[in-house]
Image (cartoon, rainbow, N blue to C red; front, side, top):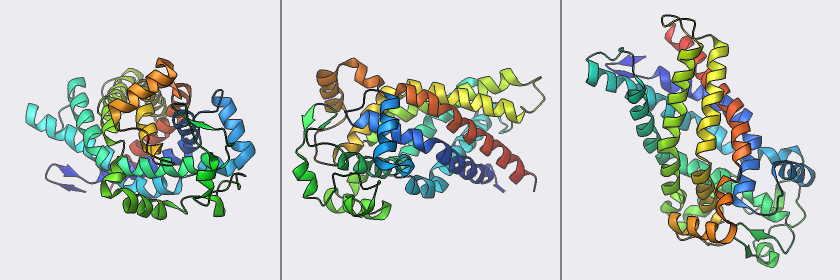
Length: 323
């Protein structure tokens, strides 16, 4: 599965790890999005209870079909690009792609991965968030305020044929009938550039975020190995991946809040003019604490999601390389 220095097995293993992590992490991802992009929940548990009461368990999986379907491309891109970039850096610096990468090499490959991943990750996240948020708007009372304190009369929502009774999380009360309809609606109203709304905030999140994802993973794996020549045990991979995920997601929360708000913004009407305007408006109306909204959810969901991701990736990679 190689061609010169380029390897495809990393892309295939990334697909397996990514798909499994979506199933594990999506329910809490929905909670995180509701907390960050909306206003009306007291805390994480209040959000969870509210979603379950109004939308049943299906509400936690709102918008999952699209990231699950596109995870083949996105996580293959992330892990495939990262691994190949790391090998290329080793070849350029040391003359051998198999030379062990130091932490600066891992950080460089990680940051390049974060930059490249936005090309596919921004549209995927945008559609996921729009689908996650549409049921949220449908079940809110008429006095509901979006994040930032801007009130919306629900009559405007009803004019878009949305229901205010919850509808169990879908059906005729939804603005978008599904991922493809959501994409078509965004492109029709906003053009192709509409699919990249929040892309700038995503770059600010993912370039340092992936460095704080892959570097801690490499450090923890080395610490948990019995010796330098031994491959890490599956449990060590699982633990290292989980810890790295929690660190990365918690530190990325401020920029993740901005990204989520920008991407959810056009659900009812445009409120933010860009990244800086979103930051200033959010700070003025809700204070600095707003940028840490959802941090506890990120810390909790980051562990099982990333633990599953790295374990699935490493075990799949071993399997593909055995042929």
